[in-house]
Image 1 (cartoon, rainbow over the protein chains, first blue to last red):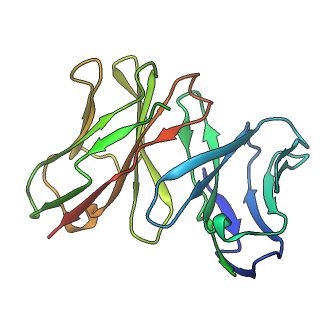
Image 2 (cartoon, each protein chain N blue to C red):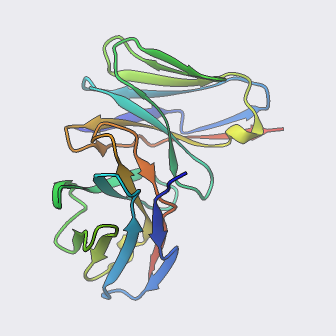
Length: 111
Length: 114
């Protein structure tokens, strides 16, 4: 079905440590977006991945799309307290733009 | 920077009552969406809207729900007879480039059904 599994559900890190969240699908995805939601906030778009094996970087964030386009990951290097929030992967299904969000990984960063 | 706005920020209603949640998408956007998020859970797709009609709706979006774009700026979600399980944060989103592009989310309306 149209769902993605995201792990881990929670991640607690010390400031400066790295963080990775993984997103897995049983079906091939045409593309995948990543969103960040701060506590009490709304989802904010981070990136979209389209090509097989694609890697994109945004400062300390590195996004990857698997070769088979069935999985994706977000890696944050040297976390900061501003990274706190829940990170969701969200593939787009069909031409209507429907996003199917994963369960999200909640990141907490201890200063 | 343009943003999606939603009103009210919090709506409390009694079970069985009708509610209308309002959204003003970004002005030149063409694709509109409603999502909901039950407290502590993931964001769930409800409906997408393009060219004045529903493009797709989820199983959650049953006959109790409807959407409308009554004028050139507003996009509304109506729940005809609210149930306790409708309590959630409702997010409106819009996209301008096309259906497969970045979606801009509004701040949400927290609906509490008592």
